[in-house]
Image (tube, rainbow, N blue to C red; front, side, top):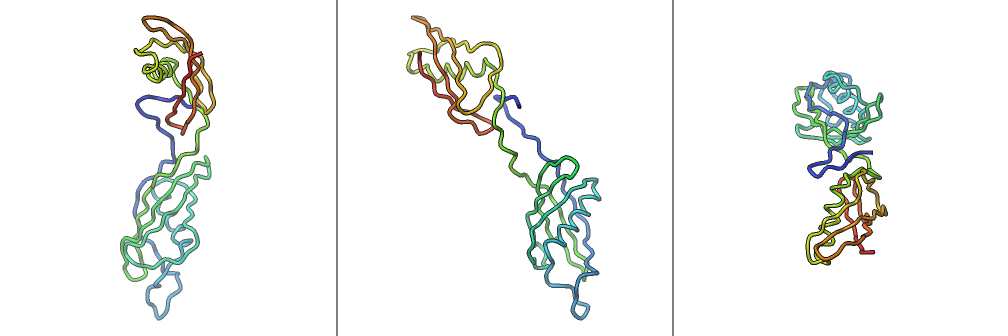
Length: 192
């Protein structure tokens, strides 16, 4: 479980660096000793794995199975998996230069969506502040809210009873988490 923060929530992703290296297609199928006009995305993925390995990363890259034109600027989005950890990431592989049968590649790590998070921990004081904001209008003033001291697990459907105090009275509210996207959440609050 991760802890929510009011500043930022950072999800760990596979560290992917940008790197460039020449691609040798000397064994590619040629007609009259001319450079091929297309390259298989599978061959491009293999070349990208070599480029990334030269920078010290061992990953399995999958660029699909299509034929791509051998033209400067041709790029393809590829997925990557670290076989040791199972972490996933992505790369953009771009042909940057062509010199006969040799091609330069740029392999740049790209962000991928982090896996969905089902729950997270929130400080009780932060949950109390959000609850206070939610009931201020209905109470007519900003209340003091106490939701306890233990961290609160955030997930859709979670119900938390909190005590509130204003200048004229005190009472209890039930705060229910109605939406949670892994980084932020919303609550609905009713007075009991």
